[in-house]
Length: 235
Image (tube, rainbow, N blue to C red; front, side, top):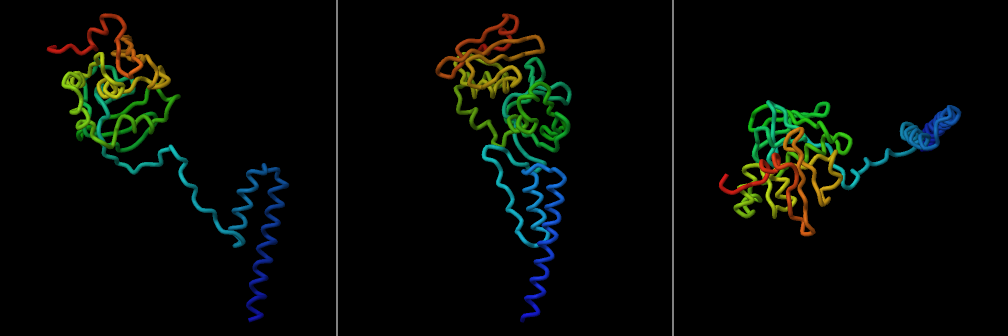
């Protein structure tokens, strides 16, 4: 068996020599040390002197790539202009009710292509691009669990307000989102903030003011706007 060992030793020696030459080339090229580590590892693997490292696990709290198409539901009442649904979600526009089936087909530049109950539409990330990625925003808008069973657990008046896409004093943050959508991330730093700035239209701003209990304590803004966004039973 001595001739077998000699051949093996010869392959290892030649591999070691190639690795040393390549490492010397890396050093002379002035590549940063951090980069050298990765390159050296790849060289050692290629000549059989090391094993490839295991695939890195996803960082906790980050979403991995999702298989498309993806079936889901509208998180909340959404509003659209022709085939465009954006993160402004202006309540003056026609409404898609919370829980409506949505199929996410593909992603483009600041937009996602979807089908809403089989109708081709687009989700447009117009305002919050600097605060969150398109994928994160779409995952907020198109949820995996149908929200309609949860909505039926709300008080009848809250359910009625959601059906109209309006707000009312006493709503929780969750209920407000279900009815009017997420506040713009470009104008609202955190959902836990005591005041949300919302727009019914491009010029129709109003504010939801939350109490310490996390419920809407008042809706403020111009009367011409608040009169249209506050739920009023019987109307």
